[in-house]
Length: 310
View 1 (tube, helix red, strand yellow):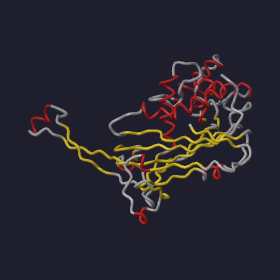
View 2 (view 1 turned 120 degrees about the vertical axis):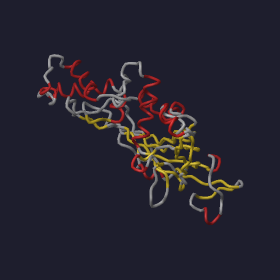
View 3 (view 1 turned 135 degrees about the vertical axis):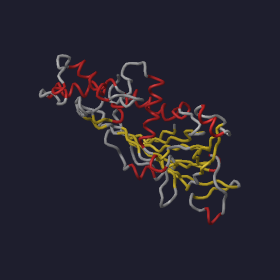
View 4 (view 1 turned 30 degrees about the vertical axis):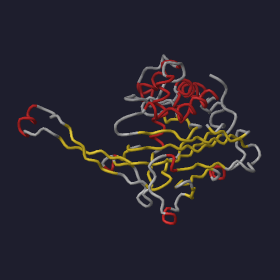
């Protein structure tokens, strides 16, 4: 592993979906998540982190230091036990495993082992005190919920299946076609914000998140949708990743002032209009990324800020 990152980063991440469900809401029959007051679409930070984890598992899962802690069907206490087996193999009693060692250096060593071996612990942090205790650590990388730049119109589509589940169904029903439902967003462009803190990567209490990990995170954001295809998710793609790099660990400007430099316009008949002017200009609903224009204001940047357009 390389040294922990030395710079703060803030970023704006745009992605879109066509004829798919980017993040179903289990409390609403798996309908696409929406803000009920604005009807803008939502994608949770947890959903985005899941896709990052899945990509890293595919791309680097066989390499040391790139295991995934919150993996598919993972049992977290067994993940914690790996750290105890490596650091304190002599401790085997369940009651002793529930508490961190009284020796603070050994307790830190358990947490450090988890950070060193699990990419997502090193990146997003984790609470690892469930039954088998490895402490907890704050992750240097955090995402916000993604929100569609304009209101979406979720559709419920009827589908049929030309097969029966059992022989009994076929005998009783005669017509064995089964009706079902799919929920889709015809098109939506979503925007999420992200924050990367150097102090939370550094020092004895940091996770050790490194420049190598950072490069892998950018790679995952760029490629994760290509390895997450399903009938439910339709066509999803990364469209723009605008990164603000600070030249110090604490940062040179507030994140919100940097995010304000990234704006999105609607494009119609060769003209660009601010998002939200639909009533004024009567442009049709967006159905492709070409209906939008993302603009980054690079003039008069605060000292110490560099823009990376990835």
